[in-house]
Image (cartoon, rainbow, N blue to C red):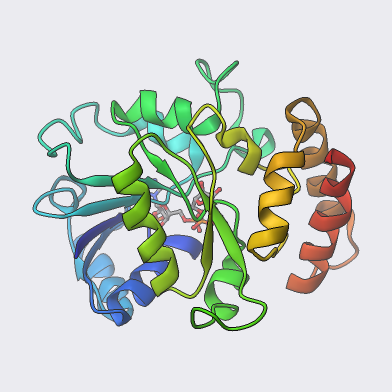
Length: 247
Ligand SMILES: NC(=O)c1ccc[n+]([C@@H]2O[C@H](COP(=O)([O-])OP(=O)(O)OC[C@H]3O[C@@H](n4cnc5c(N)ncnc54)[C@H](OP(=O)(O)O)[C@@H]3O)[C@@H](O)[C@H]2O)c1
């Protein structure tokens, strides 16, 4: 597939690297000048592209930028992108980082992003930590394979998203519609807790929407109050224990 990735931070860069290694033709963009971007892209096995070009002549576009950055993207960014092109979104909302965003209230995060982009997104790769994505992938069928959920409206697009997830080393679980996608947002038991498919299905089903924001903020407070920034396994343990109250 031809894949355009917007954002070469923690998540975008790992996806670029892994999808390129899986045989896809990947181009990436970020906010840097073309010389710096070209160096970054080359290290990821990808091509460098401007924001305008990264969405052209591709089968899928992955948005992996801070939640607050979507509203400032050019309004016509996806105007000429065919409906067949799959739009994937990895983002999560943290008020402490992203601030208050007009238009988000009462919507799931992916409904807000879809509305902002003018295109229905597939929500995927949002409930997996950077370290997990980089280091904990396994071949299909291997015991203990971690699963992530895929939410969205277009079943064919979700199927392709699931294939991409498989290619980078993880199982997928049906996350439902965008309206249901709060079940995989920060603060839920399905969020960055390294579950297998059976456990993730249970976590998605058990989530309670009203409790998620407080659990999300409580976990963030634990990270920030830790004497030293938690190692990966400690972060997962904090997520598991804090979000378990939300079952
Ligand atoms: N980190 C995680 O463990 C994790 C896990 C799951 C989901 N997520 C979510 O995935 C998204 C990306 O996370 P991250 O940790 O990868 O973020 P990050 O490390 O801060 O990287 C963000 C990337 O977005 C780029 N960017 C920002 N505004 C842009 C714009 N207008 N046009 C093009 N590129 C732009 C940045 O460009 P520059 O490089 O030029 O600054 C950077 O490459 C976030 O919404 C986050 O909540 C993160």
